[in-house]
Length: 304
Image (cartoon, rainbow, N blue to C red; front, side):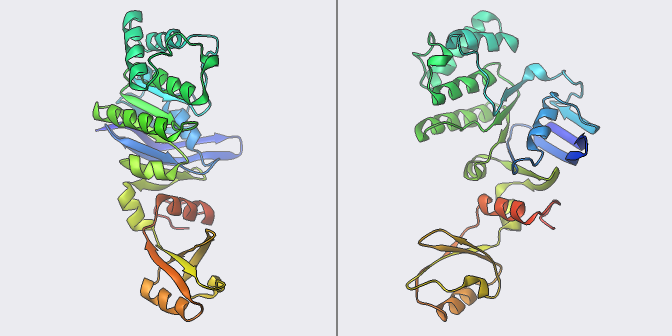
């Protein structure tokens, strides 16, 4: 079963090919990560799933329906650019969004109150949006997206503006929604959050799909060895070490990406300078993202 399916979807803006023959399947009941550099086509793909814009070619199916508005009442959306009516009270705006999604007013008020309690905002019911902190307003925006009990919830940077405590609260609610059967599309630039939270991850770059799979599968297929090293004296020129693909300066440490065996690298480094620290680090999704976005790879599987 799938919640969303894109088949050969293409979208142009004049001479710009924003999305290029995109095939994509979002499994039902999953948290599915959308990642990609700025200008990659990610936002265009999301807007086509939401029927805000339409593809030039290809098919889009949302919750088993192809009609451009057929599934809208079953879809919730938290946009990256937030939009709440600042002069309205929290309770009134949540009731308003709930009724937009088909809930009777009384039920919408009850559901809004339940969500406020879950997110630690039980006393915010009568406050105006303009009186809220950025983090509080962010949580209200999330409630507005989820209050209609959507089957598909699309979250664009849901953790933006949240401190660690509130981030954890929101994260727990996203996982609870998944347990209740909601499919979540999670769009983010936070690679650590995507890696820990998502069942599957899709990456778009220059309009084309370059990654699609579970975090473990992606890291196994695309993650070169990462070595973190600190030198007791001045660091040698690591670009001269054979088989080092890239070097990242972290201050006290240097992070090396290589396909060579760690023992070979250690032996060669030790012959050039004293070593205080040598660590084999598991590649992260951040590493894979930078590798692909930085080298201009544009085809699925990571091949240039």
